[in-house]
Image (cartoon, rainbow, N blue to C red; front, top):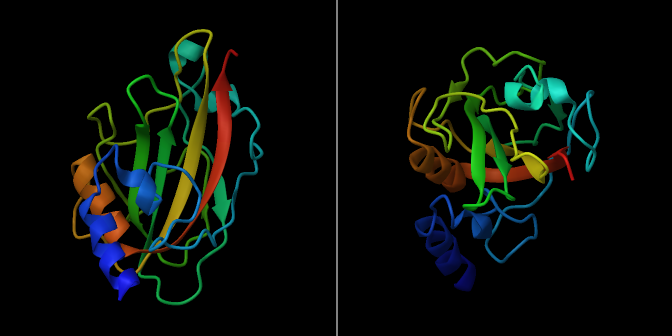
Length: 188
């Protein structure tokens, strides 16, 4: 069957720069063999397409580097955990991953401002650090920042500080639904 063939091919191609076909760190369009965009993502602090408030940005941009509050609809059945990936598709060297939270509770539907959920794990980001790396585009540039929530069929079998590519690959293999919110930051 054609669909059965494409899913493993897509998963085998997972890597930081090739995650777009599977919906990780890429475009939101649905491609054959991908999962549905059925989760709605929002924030009480900013709106889709708007500028993210400066308090969530890096100190060099006048920010406090706080993690932003988010809300999302919970996927229905078959969810064993959830994950969040924050990336910047406008970075000069390709998609820059600012934050990866994984193994969040399957029933969670929000993140509080400045708080990492208990029992959630954080992967290394593109900078090679564990945790949230706030938006910090070069002076005079405006970048997009994508918050993508993934419903996973099971927990990722990795722990806090795991390598970025390993975690993204594991997320891709377990994704049953996803949703995305895109905001902007920087001078434009």
